[in-house]
Length: 484
Image (cartoon, rainbow, N blue to C red):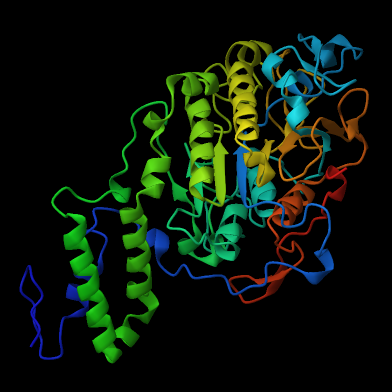
């Protein structure tokens, strides 16, 4: 007869399922990782294709930093100024020269003007939405590669569902799991959100919760809590190891019980949690106190700036995919924290948002370049759409002030750097009012396909949805010209 220490619960057949799960639970570790690690297995799907062998850029990335500027920053006021356009289009800002000959950006981005030689500026992002184009629908399109299929009467999407298409980082987490004890996919510092719809387009959907991101929804500019990645003080490593060995022995000697618990994969995933916690790599990656004050200040002591610094540390530790969301509700108040400049455009951009973006993004690119990390890390910065070139008009059913800009998916901009992508290049061009691409249009699906491609994943590979129906990973074309 076997007796499990703690609350007594014995049977002639061994421990009960409840007792075994109590021993094997992460409560022993003092972390909440079983939900994160459960069912996560090494990918069985093919992640490459012979037809790409030797192609420029294919499998050039080991990892990705995806900077998602939720809220829709104004491309014409940041990346694509039109000084010769009429006043109600060109806006208040003057263009300034950049390190890319002949390419100017807004005066609100002086640091990026001197850093643009480390990346490609895409000025021809474009898509035509089906029906209403609100934030959530555009976010879902950008991050999953598929348009939403259900919209509520209010025009917003339905809440996240297990039937949703997976976000890009979840696919990467499954197909390219790290070999080291690190978190494969991390999202910070806040969720994707429009009003009451939280997390749509930011989860693993039909892949299952095991491939959800590790969500650090805290402000990295302040001390953060990492209890779920730390040992409890009353559980030393030796004791934890003993408990882990006991659990392995139980699983190994009780075939029927092991079979009954197969869906929980206790042995495998407890082992992953064990390695993850004891290695300390994930915990250390989140510890910004290990950085010099000068480095932290270069990134900016803001939520966004410190999130980008943390993304660099996570990539160094071995994380495959880090998604940094702009720390604001997508349709929030532009006078406080949001890019959604319907009511006011120029003041918030000049005084709040562009200074943060300028300092932090330029710092990340410089820092990663100096460390040689851009050789194997793809950096992408993009929003779900741009803003209407003409001020004071309604393009999405919203009310706009005379100096406000509405949603505009028909033309906007993105930054891409690393993994052999041409540095110091402008890709594509918009028309004279930044209303539509003049040449080389890039659909969001094309950019997402390119991200997969750099990771050695065939974007046309077949996946099965929740109904076991075959679907393409993403319906997009690789932007191969980025490797000029």
